[in-house]
Length: 139
Length: 139
Length: 139
Length: 139
Image 1 (cartoon, each protein chain N blue to C red):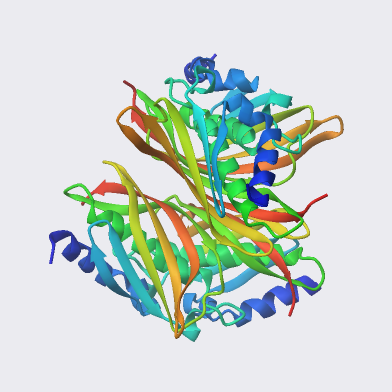
Image 2: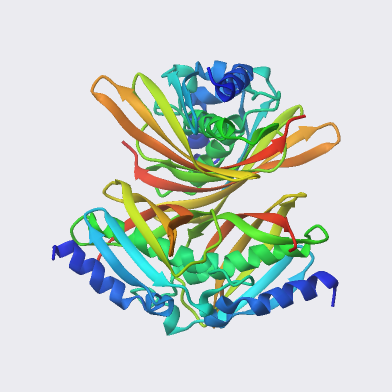
């Protein structure tokens, strides 16, 4: 396992919020990540769909860790801001969030991510994120 | 209690995600709402701060319900999109998210919301949202 | 020429702001558009780069017209909101903005667009947009 | 005139895009700015309203200069990203964009700005921006 992948997985394991989502990091590569979590009644809004905040949580972590895979030595990643468009109701067996680095500099990284509902008949795009991350020195 | 406030509180009670946050709707007025949730280790990111996704969840619900307080008769609210800036680490005893309608039309409403960390020495601004909501006919 | 392409080009021709940019619509296809404008000193910010607002103008029109190519019969397009990340200084001989529809429904369309600086050594990504458009009945 | 106000006005004077808009900086205070430009047929979209890009140009400059009024010594400001909601058609005699710093740190500043159409019967809110600016060392 690459050094960056180990860093990503160790950090992910410390995000208690990921356990609350039931999320796992299903892929980490150079500049991309993938996070999955199952549908759960505990994460729903008033219609029984997954709450936009639950989907956003996975998208944000996916973007942050994508940025971390290409981080300058000795730095970590914080979210500066993100924008999310909700494209379809978040239903299905599970959600998969896939993030990629669009541009990474010394200080900032811009990432995009899509979330898909995984259903018996395939994946359906449900949300998309455009996010800005900042590299800060590791304490 | 005003009619809109009852609708907001009934819908809020059906959002299971709010229970997962431990959130309560602490205020509902015409065009504004307030949601509070306590710090919990289950909602944290890798540094022990509350995950941006948890804060966003409260901001999104606060915006949606602010839009609902001024919704056209017979309609409900869905999130179209939102943007969040993270301004400071989300620590403290609890978080309060306060939303207000910036402009509501027949189809769309634009809302802003601020999230504050509540600490012994006062409130500190930690995040801000600018969101677009859509009114759809009640099924 | 397809019917939608004619509508797009006729509307584009009425955007006086495009003439102020010196912009042309260099491609229109089903779900995508491309707008180009040359570097001009009249469009610069304090360092001599093109102003983010000039680049945004092209990105917004490109997104709007991409949405128009897949619009429901009898409707036109208005911008609801957009988010732009500026990725590199806007220099070069010209700028090309390429937009595509990410998801179009009956009421809303979500589009993405990238802007590139065109230089002797190739194209360089300088900005990216994530936008929401609304379909309204043609008056 | 305060030192920061002089810096803001000198930089503004170098933005050729502001001349193309016919814009003036009508107010600069600690943490806030105001930019005005008259309605002009050269800045319109297909319905004769001012193009969202023209309004965004003023909002972006207003935010950038608001950030500059509170910039760390020896630094200048670049736009990282912004999100704009278009709230009403941009018509009227002129547009005024008012920006304020929401939070400024050592590296980033977050600003909000509203644009109003100035009409004989008063001002009407037409757009709002939430933006991230970065401080970089003066070259």
